[in-house]
Length: 546
Image (tube, one colour):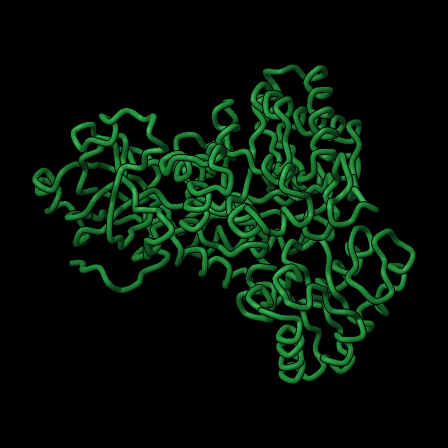
């Protein structure tokens, strides 16, 4: 990714802090020259750069790190959730309906798009019905996506806009819609968003991300998820106005015109949320065995191994990344089989160079992990999925049972096998919040899959750049891009994964850089400033500068 046209040109000297840099592990100061890191070292040596600096910032003990990369976001939906009807924190169905009614009163007949309900957290333990939405909204057009965005409660007025939904898989006369029926009503609901609303949502999502130390995001666009105009607007905003940088993905099969549209849009790949299946919460993830709490279904698979192979071959030959949304083990089996078939056609070297991606990849077998390692497939994963829904009594255990839940989100196994693991939020499915995600990966519900703090931090920083083919970005070192965040922390410590680690690596004399304490009882770091290409895109107004 080249520097944006708004990149900084001044020279800024930071001093008096702690700089997270394996290249200079004792650094307390740093010089930024325009959009590039020019120097790192100790405060005593920083004096030599003072006269050449346009600005000098006293860090007052703050921690400077590479900025975070969120490797899976949906900016418009995230922005709408930030500024509109957010149901993710509702404690009951009654509360959700009350918020809907208040929103309907405020909009006075306008379309209502909301997100985030999760019936497994409500005492009613059921989703809203169509009749309840109609009453609460006085007959308005209503689209309320479930937390996983793979089903939605919709009003009769919205169904009337797309009557063909009644004849598609996933239709229900009263309950939320899933599968193809959901896809068509979602597309209709997104069509009610004005250009002004869409652009405001983009701005809100980038502003929120910047306030959390996020310097780059991978946008997962595609037909029925967003639109070509949506992605074009977002990429244009990223190039035009300061904020987190955007890498775009367009999730559409090559045989349906995906390659041409991805190229025209400037997308990095025909990848992202190109659905091989659905989600566990909505019981649409494709499983080898039926759901424990609904033995009548094993979910739905949307792509065959042949579909996958053809798409990957076309993308590889076109020089674009391919990738798929895949959650269930049956869906993973189809995708892995397709990747192997593609490799026999284009060769392993071309596959590895392609940096093809699997989004989520929650239910993998050992064989799947080995194939991903062999073919250089990126695992784009979301630690907060396990943080929110893993563990005893969680939603995953309710849906799948304890045995299958224990095999999910294999962060440690993937890293140990040599798979590039890149972390994101899937916002608005989970909140933008990279430190919370790093902590969730360190405190996995299955201790065998927990990562060290350093490995989890790398997965949410440098790995996000490697996943888009920029291996030299995401570190603080001379000549590296100046994408960074400054943090207020109460304690910095070397993150040891377990008692097997050598005592020397946790000794200060080893030069192993430390990170904020990530135990559940510690507050998460607060972002003081976020810098992209040398330009401040968020400032809490606390640091002194001259």
